[in-house]
Image 1 (tube, rainbow, N blue to C red):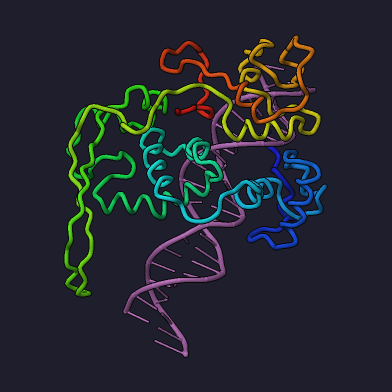
Image 2 (cartoon, rainbow, N blue to C red; image 1 turned 90 degrees about the vertical axis):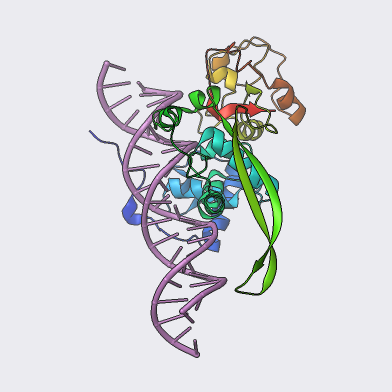
Length: 284
DNA sequence: AAAATCTCCAACCGCAGGAGT
DNA sequence: AACTCCTGCGGTTGGAGATTT
């Protein structure tokens, strides 16, 4: 017995969204909140699949989205995070507020990948393309290797020595700057990316938590401690009945300071916790 | 100016996994 | 335990607009 389709495909629109559809979706979510994507189209009077609505909202209509070109800092951060996490776009997106996983993925595929290739770097391994394979490389490139192993056993890093020189472009008769790169293999991590990793509610979760607590009569967004079954009344401050929180004086609304003060960090590398959630890695 | 080609990105698809029953 | 429902993720595609020939 297979799964039922997510929607009646015969009666749904596909392709680009119209202004009217956008308006309907925005006004519906403004008054009812996110969630219940399956029933949302019917309730909002949209002839769209729920999945399509969710994507449209998350990737395009959400008010907190940062539009426009990626900055050099963002560019740099994406490369570093990708070297650590691979194609975990949603995880990378949590470190770039206002950017969506889809946006980052597109940016990677259209810009960054090409940029790295131009510099002679394999965008998958982040190593020089002509670097001879070592036994370590081949074991590291195995697809079965998960992100945690990749982070904990992160091997030799490339030290980029960047210099600029002037080179005449003979074809156009111009003098242009040309980047030069040399690489040496050094045993270190990204120097300017502090990887003190902690477990904490992801950024989006924190925001979301403050805005919408109940979805369709079901609590879909519990705090990280609750999701892990770690709610103990001290660290947990969410409203979920399953948290078994005893603190009756708990406030029913959140302020940003409440959220930041409720963020619980677990010693990641010390592995004080046996539960790991990559969606909430916090890099300080 | 028109055709061909390329680039970019919004949107789609299939699948995995958590949660409820 | 088995099943369904629902959400979210990552890979891929289609087509509009830009660029080149």
